[in-house]
Length: 120
Length: 114
Image (cartoon, rainbow over all chains, first blue to last red; front, top):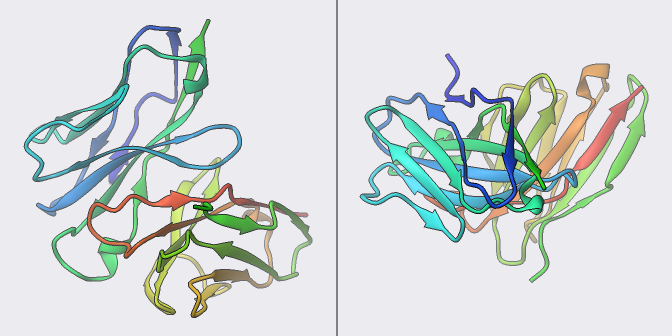
């Protein structure tokens, strides 16, 4: 089973509108972290936002917020007031085993990504 | 502060050859990890190094290897290249590689195997 599922291969949003990118995850580890990265056509992965499994509040970073629903195992990214520069691939990723050492805690597992296109 | 630097940016090789990719992490970062990105498989973890020690390895054949030097710079090597090795190889660094630390990625090396 996939650990990170992003069901939207591509999405369109009007400039200045808000958009939600979906991400569901699968883990039995109680301690994990969820990340969102943006990848423009240049190739570099840019960190957007982080949510820890024990965090009480949903994470926010400027125009980015994370709608974290632990029971449903979903971590959707919300981008408010979309800009043309937001057009890119967006990846959800998970790191497991945050509170223990061991090989598995050093890697990120990524979803397949969502291509977001912002329309002027 | 300079970001993660990967060289070369583009590389073209033929089947059977070997290739070495280089990654210089952000100054002060001791953890370096490598990812392979392809249209079919997406982003897949290759390996992670910390203080010259490999702490974790992904599910790749032994043709893929890496190392880290005392200055935290890292190299990855792919021997006996196959067509399927064509991919964007991304290097990422962080301070220790643990917990909620975000990874800082380079722009990648685009490898084409002909």
